[in-house]
Structure formats: C-alpha cells, structure tokens
Length: 184
Image 1 (cartoon, rainbow, N blue to C red):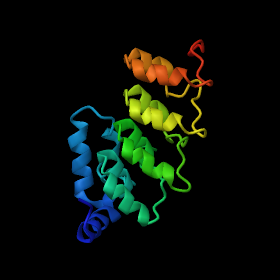
Image 2: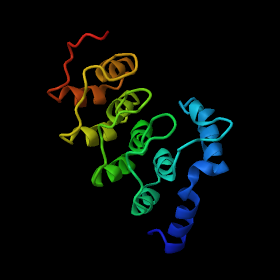
Image 3: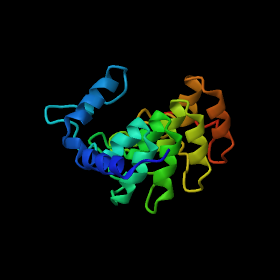
Image 4: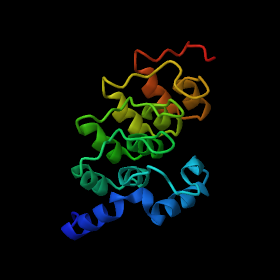
C-alpha cells in the first residue's frame, strides 16, 4: 500500500523544520543510549541542522525520503556533525534510502563528512552493511581512498578488524583498493 496524500502532507509538515522539533532531539537521545555516535547532535540548542532528510535517512524511511526530495532539499547538506543524509543512511545500512539521493542530480556519494573526513563507503563498510557497500561500489564516481578514516586507517583494515568478510571481498574487487597499503 502506497503513502496517502494526507500522510505525505503530515510528513512534510513534521520534517520541514525537523531540527527545531523536540521529536528530532528525542530520536537522537533514544538512539544515543544504544551507543551511536550522535552525542554531538544533542546540545542545549537541540540538534542543529539535522534536517528532515537526515532524520528520514537515519530511520530508513524510504517513502518519506522520496517525499522530502520533492521539496528540493540539498541532498549534500550537512548537519552539525558534518554528515549528509547519505552518510547517515550508509552508516545505518539503509539500502533503499542510499539509492534515493544517488538517483537525484547532485547527489554526491563521495561527499566527505566535514568533521571526520569520511565518505559514505567506509561508514557502510566498517559497520558491515554489505548491501550498501555493493550499491556504492557499483558507481564509478565512488573512489575508495587509501586512508579514509579519522585515524588514517584504510577502510579495508577497519572492515577486516570488525570481521566483515563479505565486505572485505567486495572491497578487494575494486582495483583502487590496495591490500598492501600501510596505515599511518
């Protein structure tokens, strides 16, 4: 069953100024208790710049992401952690949500987080989200970088350390991934 027009309207109303809603702060507080790296989103002034598109990507609500894209939001906009909606979707393993911004003009799969410098690929890889990694690696504009984490480690090393064998195999299929690259 598809989304009704009333649900679309309500979703747009809620998510239009999502970063100003208490629901955004509650969402992030709830997920923070499970150890996600969202503590910097929650402060005295609330989750700044955590737009509706970020929230829908964070939760993996594909139908809402499609509705929000109609509003012409910048799919490469960053929140206060420097993350794009695509980075949140990749980090959380939301395959269908990852596809949506990539299908839009201007959706940049290689857009690095402002604070960590990480692109969506290592977020998905490190967390073992094989489906998301496969979607990203199918694109020629996604270039695995030699050292792409804040610790100057390769995605391949981080994935192997976390025991994600399927993701390791996917990464090694790409010519740019050098298993002999020495981390700093």
